[in-house]
Amino acid sequence: MVALFQTNFTWMFILTVFLASCVVIIVVLLVKFLKSKNIEVGKFRIIGSDGKNAIQGREFFSIIKTIEENTWERFYLIEKEKPKMQMNYAEQEMIKLSAGLNSKYVSLFDKKSLEASYCGDDVVYFNVIVKNAVHEILRYIRLSFAENHFSEMIEQDFQSYSVNKSEAILQMLKDKIELYYRGHFILPISEFFTALDEDMKSIKNEIIDIFQFARIVAIDIDRKVEEKTKKFDSYLAPYMSQ
Image (cartoon, rainbow, N blue to C red; front, side):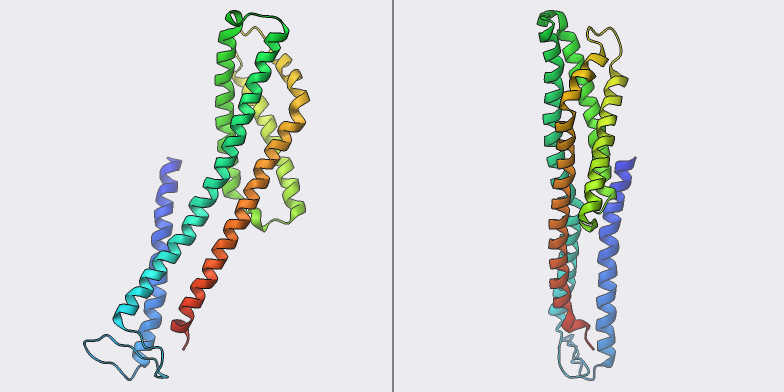
């Protein structure tokens, strides 16, 4: 249901921005048309009141096309490219984290000198538990990326934000694993968490790095959007002037 809403919103956004842009430019051109005293019938030729900035019919449609292309380019950068780059990195890092958790779990059996055939099912189930927990964490990270404007944060605020997020994610990870770790497992989950404590600092830093990378991406994308916006404004300036 959420995915459907997001998809509909995406297309509504594109259509709304495009139509609004078209309306603005059409109104401006119509005003110029009404002010004009030099109209050649059949050629759709509009000349401003100053006798300059003539717009032929073919050029008019070129303007409309440019509005459409520029609107789509900026929308794609913000709504597609930015979250894609941010989430690709987050997913890569969470895959590494999952591998580390699974390896830590297996190492505890090795320390007990238990044979693989004796603990194999537990390892398989634990891998599934970690996979489910990471899936939910990635969904939380995706929402965090969507709801916050990292590029607008000052460095101090962002550092505080990323630390708080990393702590929340670590707690979520432990809660999810403990929630799913039910049944007749050989290894008590408390023993796993005790062993995991020695890795908590490095795991926390890895999660912080996910948000730091997301901020770098956000700053870069916003810069590209601003450049396109300025270029677009410069392109329209001659047609918008009186």
